[in-house]
Image (cartoon, rainbow, N blue to C red; front, side, top):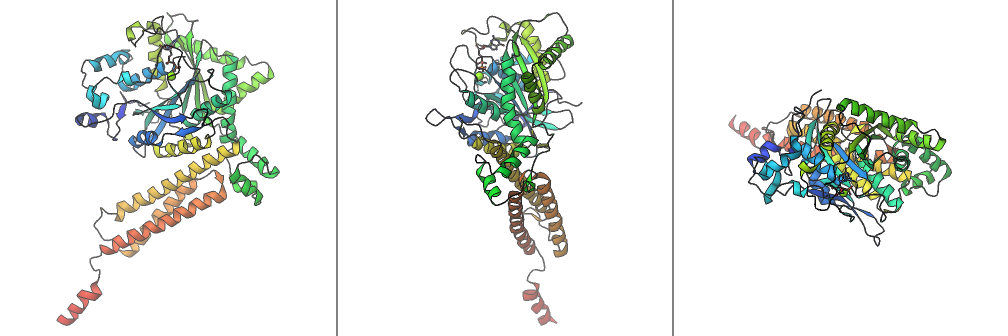
Length: 520
Ligand code: GDP
Ligand code: MG
């Protein structure tokens, strides 16, 4: 196991913490939550809108070849989700895996007192970063609508030794009176599709309806992303299903056989990790060491999962287990009577010490060695790839009141995947050709060598395309492949011309040869 001591913060201009500190005088926007998905009004039919500029600015910070993990918190509104995220953020900013103290919780205070990190972290306005944390507030009004992401990415080293950029996501409160069941399903579905680690915040205990909601929402995801999609699409094709997605329908009218589709493996589990985070748990012996408390949490989850003796409840549990590779549970006690008060303004000292103790363990678990990059169809995503999926999925949820059909989801996934495969292939070709004969290379490459290199790069690019574009309609994959080939041909002719211009014997026949003949 190999972990970094502290996370590195990637700044908006892509520099790490140290570089950013050296350049702290530069004007930078304060770290803050940015809305990436906005929820339309009732007049707009609650449609989802992508805040492209915000999404782009977050994704652009992450080095393009670094994998990304997305930690998301969902659950009923006013249950302390944003409050929790504020602490997760503090842990990412100040926490160290080498000592297990709670200092990171109060380290923001040091920032106010002029800690060395202040300018770097607080950006141009010089005020402390905590105040612009995820909003949490006492009262009944909602403060978060839509889906938000923290503007910074934090680099953590995960179990396999790789560095992963962590993004934090906050969602609009669900199950409130203003949000319809369908809309709730959409928000839950979308945040599950986009995250690698879904924290389902629940009050007091895991209730049957929590399980049912989770099963219902994740069932959509399973239909869309797992082997189930294949069955449905096949049925749709055979029966010419009227509700089928247009693109697929066209194909089935044109006699597309099911074999023309590339589908996920039947046993593929689409989502990575869901964790019930139970708040205000009352059943704790505070004197127990953490590992025993953890055992209690595990056996509690086991009880909840196994309790399903009635058939449909058992189905609910099976659905959840078939949908998430890991189902976990963590339990937090009540944070103390001061925290829910309107006058409370974030004083860590007023939080119940037992809550702080478990929160300390929790943050370490969330960002510990089990943290994984976001994976879709067995592929770990980089920021540009995730960006593509966010765009495709938001598009698919345009009508916020209606959950997309399985076929539409498959199509959206395939479309993002094809575009990613295209980008990957082209940047591979370009990267390798640039290094060999790009604008920064002054050496002339002999034609035979140049051609051999081009062919090798082209083959490698196509191989990467073929191994990535493994989902959706084969005809569409072929279209994208043709595009890749065309683009490679275009790039090739530019490299060829640039290389020819570097030939020292260029125009030899016109100038040098007659001169030599004349001299002879
Ligand atoms: P969200 O709507 O789920 O994001 O909830 P917020 O994070 O905005 O918090 C809502 C209110 O609950 C605030 O007054 C918080 O201080 C308070 N709060 C935060 N965490 C907890 C908790 O674990 N238990 C209780 N009872 N209240 C909490
Ligand atoms: Mg909130």
